[in-house]
Length: 316
Image 1: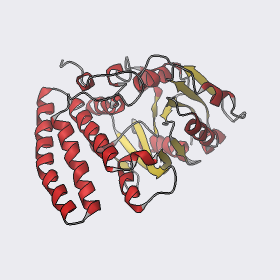
Image 2 (image 1 turned 90 degrees about the vertical axis):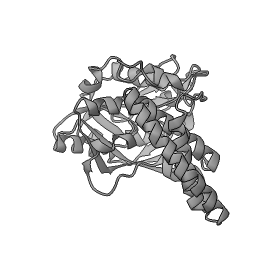
Image 3 (image 1 turned 180 degrees about the vertical axis):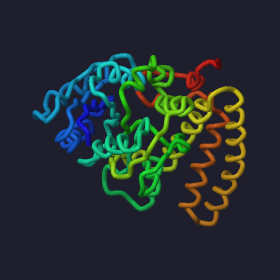
């Protein structure tokens, strides 16, 4: 692998325990044996909860820089990371992900060997503690496993996010801002950026040798959490569709999705097929989210309230 420099950006918001595990794993990356770089911790907490975590880290192979970004929203945190980064390449890792030792190196190797614009790793959801088989059924939405082989996933961009990804810094630095601040409280800012890059002709590759494990709290492993997550994902899918016509098409898809899966969920539940019923409930609520994409939702990343209508930019 040719020598390179990589800036790993870790946005964080009030998760100091998880953050420490994330940073310790990043400091163990085999990448640092063959490439220079840095780790940027962008703290979006107004109380600066990540400061003590960074200050308490042992000296590692690369510097860990602490950046306080007080404007609420993950878009501001990501944009601050892009602005402050000095590496030739940018990697984004969420603060609840523990990456395996070769994860970032595998992303860089895939990028250099394929000539892709960005590479994405395999993220596997893991429960925070032992739990029931029923709870394990709800882990699926927290994972991104696109198969056992490296492949082009440009057409599957709707399933991608920036968690455990890598791309040349120049691609994002050329965008002002890289991530839309209007999406920063509800999420979907990375999906919007990925969609726009794909429409500009950029190509994406999935690298299964890059593996991360996402910590999932037990409070998120239930039907209510699944339905909320699927509903929000449906909203984001429509908001990021690109233009009124595409949004209208996706709302129609959502209506058909809900009409198909709501009765299927009820039938499966009455038949005692709980796992099948939960799958149908998730699909149904994803469809309803597409239909009611402007419905008010509570923010998931800091801040106060926000309307889902802010998920889309005004049409050009």
